[in-house]
Image 1 (cartoon, rainbow, N blue to C red):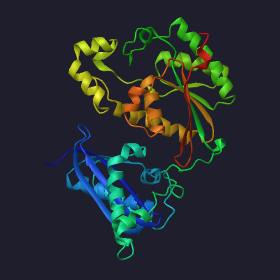
Image 2 (image 1 turned 180 degrees about the horizontal axis):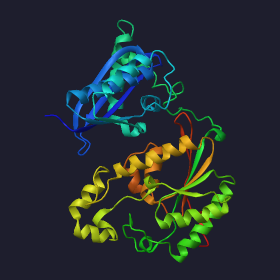
Image 3 (image 1 turned 45 degrees about the vertical axis):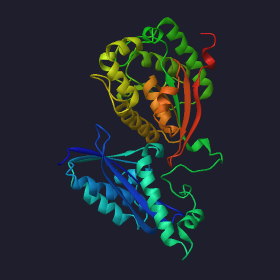
Image 4 (image 1 turned 90 degrees about the vertical axis):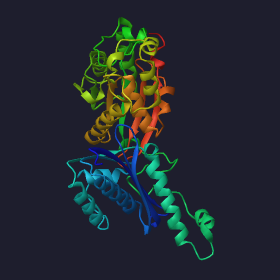
Length: 383
């Protein structure tokens, strides 16, 4: 039976770059996460980038075989994603035929979207690729060496030579190359005090929330004497916080971005956790168990992550080497930090973010990320 839409997760790598290489690809149902197809193959000696393109091609071929019309291709290779989107040039002549083959497959679908994801969220395809690399390494080992000896002789996937991956190094990196995001959660509202779900409802700051915003503004000014932009969720609890910050950092205009708005909690809006547990126990359990599940008439965290990821990518591209203040809500900020730290979904339930708390991360042009601080509330001691 043909499926309307699918998600492809693809990866590839080599032991040595170039070295024994392989790829993996998984095709999923976007609603349930069910695996519809898997592909993996050892491809002999090749580079990381060649293997990554081969993984994408295998995933697109599998999606076509399933009769899919719409595809989202998720990869942890920034290079392949940016090249397929047309934002980066394909300079290496060895990649051009593979990119052309992938583009030919893309033309067979009604719509294809490419999304970069952290490697932690691409674990299934990564595992398939690593198994294929192990097999390639075994094939390349000297006669009689055996599979175990071949694995001992290999090294982990090289990242220092691949601009699509985060350099695996403790070496400090120059901060002037990075786009620095200062992530600010809005100040206190009545619903945060009462611990009620507060999503799309436009709830204003309390008097204490306004004081928190002023204290946060002073702290941001101390952290970043020069700010290129202040970008905010369109809800008033964020724009009021953002305006207070802007007043302390040279009055740049406050720009709103709908992708930074809070999760839509649907029918749970305005209710406490206890009330939701009483009225929607099964739905709550399902929501807590999976980021793919949305509250009734609401929005899943997967959807929130997709739009906050778009917002972050736009800021990285628009403000290279500059500092941007981002004022948003607890869910979008948690999801940005989860992806920056390559953490699992359990991170979302274990991280606490205070109102008016500040987190700082640096985004490098090659896809590298450095989280500088999380939930700094030192400026709120007397508020």
